[in-house]
Image (cartoon, rainbow, N blue to C red; front, side):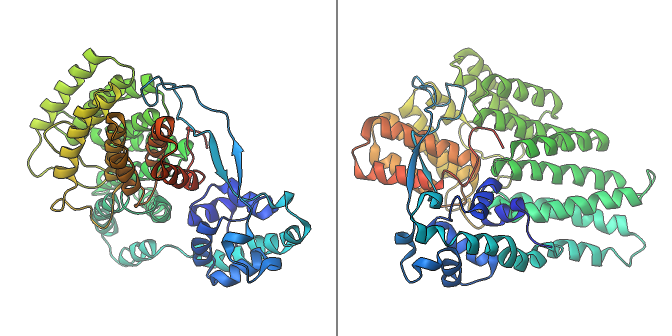
Length: 458
C-alpha cells in the first residue's frame, strides 16, 4: 500500500493539494523542497532531479525551474493593528511553484515520468515504511502484551508519553510528531475498549487519552489543519469531563481560542478565553494562560479597560502558581515580570517601545541561555521573536526587526509563526520596501508561504 496524497504531504511538509498538483504535472517541487522529498522517498537528490526533470539532467535545479509570481487579492488594511481586518493578512505577491503546463514542450515531456514516479515507484517504495507501525506503538504493544496488569503498565507509559510529546512538539516539525501521537491515541482507545468501567486505573487512561487528543489538536493546528484540530479539541473536552479532569477540557478551549486569534476572529477568541477560565481550576497554569490570552484578544479590538481587567486576573493567577510550575512544553507557561502576551497587548495598542521592552524581558527570562528550549527554537520562542520584530518595526528599528524576524524563522515554522512572520513582512514592506534586508526577508516569507495554510481554511 502506498502513500495517499495527504500522508505524503505530511511527510514532506506541504499541503496535500500541492502533492496532487505535482502528480498532475501542474507544478514541480521547488528546489528547497527537493532534499526533503528525496529523503522521504529514499532516493538521491540526483535521482529525484532526473525523474522530475529528465530533459534538463545535468542542469542545476535552480535553473531548471521557472518561478512565477501570481497576484493574490489583498486583504483589508489593518489600520495600524495587525489582524484588525478580521482575517490573516496575505502579502500581495505569493511565491508559487513553477507551472510546467505552460512551459515549452521539452519540460512538458517530463510530465508522464514525474506522475508515474510520484504515484507508483516513489510513493509505493515508501508506502511500506509508513504503513509499518511507529516504533513507539510497537514498544507499547510489547511491554503490555504479557502482563496481567496491562492497564496499570499502559497507564504509566501513556502518562510519560504525554510529558515526552509535550516537550517535543514545540521544537519538532509537527508532521513528524503527528504520526506517533495518532498511533498512541489509537492504542489508548483500544485499551479502553478492552477494559470495563471497574478496571483499576481506567480513569487514568481516559485522562491520558484526553491529553493526547490535546496534543493532536495543537499539532494539527500548527499544520494549518483547523478542522482536524477542532475535532481533537472537542474529543479532549469530552475525555476531560469523563475523567473528571477539568484542566484537560480547559487546555482544549485554550487551543480553540488561540486558533481563533490567529485567524483574526477576535470576538470568538475572547469569548473562548472567558469560557476556558470558567472551566479551568483556579491556581492552574491553564487558568493563567487563558486570562493572559483574553488580555491580548481584547487588546486586538482596542478595549483597554477589559485588557487591564484581564491583566489583573492573569497577574493574580500567576502569583498563585508554584515555583515548580512547568516552564517548557505545550502545557506550560513562560514566567517573567509580566503575564504572557503583555507585549502583544501593548503592541496592538501601538505602544511599541513598551512592547519591545516587555518582549526583551520575556526572551531573557523565559528563553535565555539558562532556560533552554530542549533541543531547538520552540514555536513559542519564535513567535515571541516576531512580536519583538513587530515592536522594533513600529519604533523604526528596521535592522532589529529584520534580525528578530530571521531568527524566528530558523526553527520549525508552524502556522501561527507564519501568520506573525507575514504581519512583520507587511509592516516592513509598507515603509521600507527599497531596503535590501527588507526585500530579503520578504523573499524568505514568500518561500515559506505554501508550507503552511494561513487564514483558517483547510
